[in-house]
Length: 354
Image (cartoon, rainbow, N blue to C red):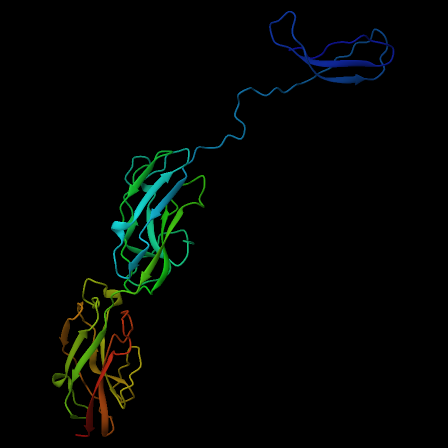
């Protein structure tokens, strides 16, 4: 490389031109870059000009980016369903990697501890938040469908795709209306992607209200009793499911966390409010009788019934008079029913002092 080429020196101004040349050539082809004008020089005076020219290396990448996966998902489902149905066999889920690097799956060899999963949820809109969805047998926004987590995934190379089967159990208490079946890929945000904003795909669906349980009780009790006595052995209590879907019991496998119990109370009327009754040894309106909570219940199929023993200790300070022994099934309102207004049964009883 030549750094400068001298021009004739006069008595006033010297112009120095800068060039680059191809190496190892006696007669180089010069490439002109710029001129430097110097101050007045005295004849026979020498000037040393230092010049540095930065030449980019041809072929070097500019703004090079790291190769990364980019996961997207496509979902297609039925246009209509009934609450309580499992539409899994009709749902098609396709995972795709449109990035430039492999995305790890949970069963792959790349990084299974940080592999992607896919959640299939039911939503009223297409805005599915990040994070693993929560399953529930009851409808809520963005609820994970029963069997809707695809947790067994493979490494997905750049440009590759993979179809996955999924469950799709719709909560039986889903109200009638229009919804979206949505799939979120990498729901746990474990895979670093080139684009984190394209992980959701949705398919519209119309859901009609479906099968539900309908709990009620059958009750018989003595026509009279004395205050302080226990009428439990004389009480016959039967739980009945008049609905079209099973009702979960506290000891059953269906959904023990959201199951029915039965409260037996003493009341001056037949208007027993919702909610668990409160026990007291002293009389008060709708007081829970001693031993009157049936908390160990079984799953009750549609059309089935179950007899339960119960306690029936009447407060010793109950004034003489006419009352009602009432049974309220599902006092905690944990079971979604087709009819919530028929959970109370009452029989009349006369209370006297011993």
